[in-house]
Length: 472
Image (cartoon, rainbow, N blue to C red; front, side, top):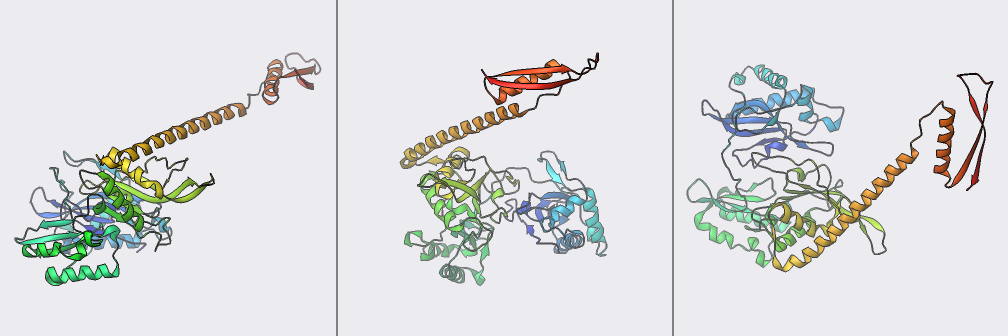
């Protein structure tokens, strides 16, 4: 194949698999007529340094049958293999091929649905023709996209203890700070699974945490008392990490990745712990870190996304120096109505730096949480945040004033540099010469002498004999 290929399958409206940022996404949907369970198919989502693309729908529903989903995926992969871009690595993803088939358009297929993007029908037809060529008749089982659920739905939490549909059993979500486990912690997780889970089953989430399924009711107390999950005894892992700490996602970062501009995991864990102490929030705030524009940390899907980027800060000698910083994205969403935030927020990192220095990030994030996510600062931190906010407002005002002054100076320079239109009128020409001299030499007197060549009526040509500039 030209490049990597990701397939995401979600079994509920929670969309824990994040189908909107994968090459193929299968979203559960009941057939409106038959009531049969199946999947609406979305395509083309991906993230890279060149482009971040949100998936689009294929106007295709496939029944919840293993053979059907495998055959559909096989057809899409084979067409991608044969027709995908191989010369330009940056365009070697499925979305670019889908767009070659025709214009992507916004549609609203059913009443109550939000408008969303859809691929050209010719691509759908090409895939169905490929499926038909296999001779299994599965292309006859598919249909057009089915209505998406429109009723109210709250995405479920994964960290903590929750009863399963099976009586007497529970799923236990263990938080792994910034998704990083030490060797000792990995062994502790294995021991917990062997002790409390039939078959020692361990599940991993896209948020870099762990789920132990099928834990019996009678074992919950003992599991909660395990030292490996007790933060009061120095453990990093826990069952109830908090609404901020429990929702942090981080890429590998500069410690182990050569592409990352900043260290992510250590900073993510430290700053989340600080924010948890400073501000209270009514619901989880998802903060994602990525060290570079490839966005392995999926910052465009986060409530608050932090992407490693250039930042400047004045050192003790009064010189602006480059420091580790982040560019901030605000407002991405996940779940069944997931939406990416493709544009970074306009942010004054201080002294004209668009990136925010990581060492100054805590008060910036605190204010964002207060302003955008209904956060409430704890009383003991109010004064410190107020002082920072006033200083930031003053810095913003100074930055705005500097920008306006720069724009005004540029406009004035452009006006002065604009050449006067040429004229054949000798009197007007002399006047323009006078104005030009006044611009270049303040307070001068311009004397112009002219001679009429051959004194030809109606077609006189004048020569400037002498331009004498004297001080006033």
